[in-house]
Length: 201
Image 1 (cartoon, rainbow, N blue to C red):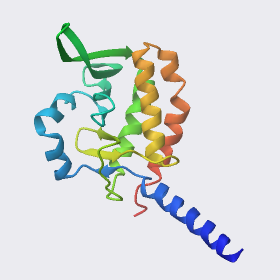
Image 2 (tube, rainbow, N blue to C red):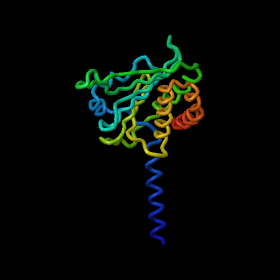
Image 3 (cartoon, rainbow, N blue to C red):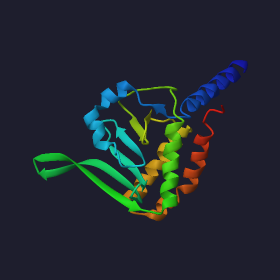
Image 4 (tube, helix red, strand yellow):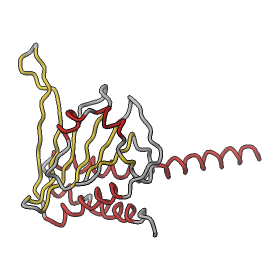
């Protein structure tokens, strides 16, 4: 019985440490910059977006996609999704094609999504830099830096972050602003979580 309790406590501690390890995003490393290649990465990184999330699934899963938040500096308030898929030019010649779609929204909505990504990126730190070939790598950018996470674990802040932004991408693809606004309570809640991760000093 005592061994079972010790085993259970150990498992719970490991699970807690795993989730805590992904409470923040991680800075993008030079290795990752070389891995993705500047030219390939530049195809997806928008210099005009206020904040953004880039999604690179494993090659066996799907093609890259991205969510961009635009507002201010002469931009209309909107969220845009860009993705890559195979289009057949001729029956014997499939080719990759970039496509995009956007939803115009109000400034408050755009600002809430922008703030979420901004605080997630600003509170990033080196925690548990894992690499693999069977998961999804997410990159998050603001105007200064890029942070990343690979295959976030269930229950972690990073998983909540990718989940809500994946839902935002779906809402944009569906051209459904109501669906987008329904995510705002989770966006606001998660933004507060990241704000609390700033150093107290």
